[in-house]
Image (cartoon, rainbow, N blue to C red; front, side, top):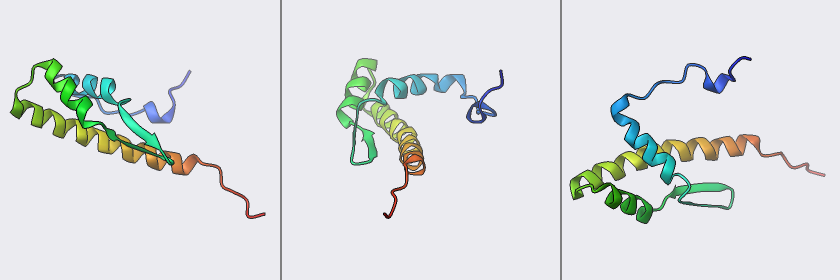
Length: 92
C-alpha cells in the first residue's frame, strides 16, 4: 500500500525539539472553535502546561513563543483547508 501524498517527503524534526512537538499535541485541543474557523490555544492552557514542566519565567516566554508559532501555522492550515473543502452553495 502506498502512502498518501501528504505523508511523503515530510521533514523530520530534530530530536531536541520533540518536547515542543509533544507539548503542542497535548495543547492543540485547548482552543476555541466556531463560526467556521479555529482559534488559538488558550493562554491559560499554555501557562498551566509551562508551570507543570517547571519552566522559569524566561523559559516560559520561549515556550509560549514557540507554541504560538507552531499554532499559527496549524491555524492557517486548518482554516485554509476547511474553506477549500466546504461545499459550494447553489444559486437556485
